[in-house]
Amino acid sequence: MKTNMPLSKPIRRFISETERMLDTEITLLRKPDAAPGGTLIDVYSYNLDKNIIIFPANYIGVLKDFVIAKQCTHLFIKGAAAKKSGYKVCSFTEDSVYRGMRQIYLDALKDEAKKEKKLTVKKLLEMLFILYRQFHEDINELPWNPIVNARIYYRMEQLRKTQLYILLKDGKQDMDELSDMMEIIPRRYFVLDKSMFYARDLYLAKTLPSDKLTPVVNIPQMKKFDHLEVKEMLTTRWTHTAWYQSKVFGDNMLTIMEKHLAVDWTPDNSLDYYAALYETGVNLTNALLAFMSMKDWFIWEKPKHLLAAQEQMATYEQAALKRIFGDLIEDQ
Amino acid sequence: MPVSEVPRLLQRAESYIRQTKYREALVLLDQAVRLEPKNPGGWCMRASAKIEMEKFAEAIVDCGQALALNPNYADAWSKKGLALYHLEQYAPALAASIRAVTLNANDASAWYIKGICLEEMGKSDEAEIAYAKSLELEIILDIKDESKRVRK
Image (cartoon, rainbow over all chains, first blue to last red; front, side):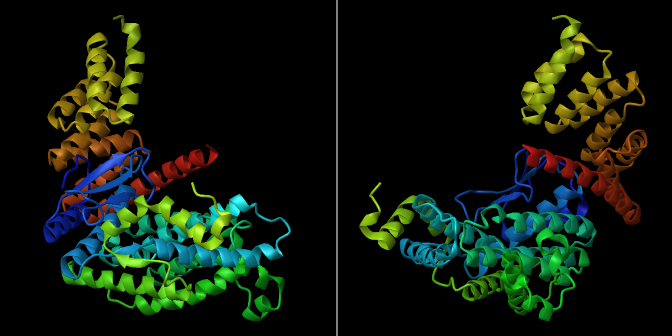
């Protein structure tokens, strides 16, 4: 471990154990402009010879410990998978991008027909790939979040208060994401995106357990659904709001999460245990993709494939637009 | 260079430290303590830079200089606690961090060092209290930073 910063004993022990079991090196890096949740740049996803965990420079105490614990747990999952069964991520190809963007376009058409203020063609075309990428990003991150958090909750009790603060903060941020685009993107995708985060927060509220995490209490737009009876909700105008629909879909996603995440979170650290957590995450990802009818949008591939695909993003987007709109799209 | 230049040197050094350019900061801080050796702020800031450069023993000497000039300098106690912790001198590090939080109860870093030292010394219950205080202060700072980011 390379660091010159103070760390609490359990975190130091956990980092050392991760390094020893994965036979790898972890460097901790403090950066003023780091993402609040920290960033993991690891040898399993990138062509590097050591892992780097970056966290915000203003996190000096237990907030820093939690970010490190979270990223280190994720690293352990990736490393165990790489050592045992092979580590893969959700990637994309020219074909899968086409399938995703085409579906978003068809849904957008339905929505646009009902809208008074229609999107310009330029904006509509841009939105197709932006939304596709958003879901790619979310599906590669979201299913791992409850896994990592549940594991930390049961293994590092001293971080629980910090964890609760970070989760509340994350929950609010994730629910706010796309809010300013609510009227622009097709309703279906706004609802599905919110539902994933809603389900995650509810799952964590039940698992951790904390009533403070409940989205219907903490998300301003959802407060009105708290204490409302189903009958009341079904017979009022609430049924038409995107937030109500997010709650309904989110409740279904919660059932999926509970089914797939019925695992023992307490065993000692071992490669087998973390490799099993990886399989759990893969199964949960697949189940969520199936629920959202996005199964053919992405493919499981080695991280190298994803890195190459990301280099080709602009080409894939252009090719998909060409296939959807034919000659209406000019070559660039 | 006149003594009146010292505040400017310290300002520039602080900016370098924020950008994690410790070597550059140290050059300026060496000048600052030479020009105005009776300014505890210069010694304390140099201790900060030295801690980042893992020159812990030298940092403790600088903290000592600052504290000789102002025994109630909370930040110097805090930095001394941190440097001592790195040298695994947990008992004196704990004493320094206790002094730091007594003088400035809003120093999240000092509360955290206090917690770590207590934990190392096997006093988990007391450590938990110190960590809780550190978290409380960190959350306040984080919320402030967050609202600054939103305003931008």
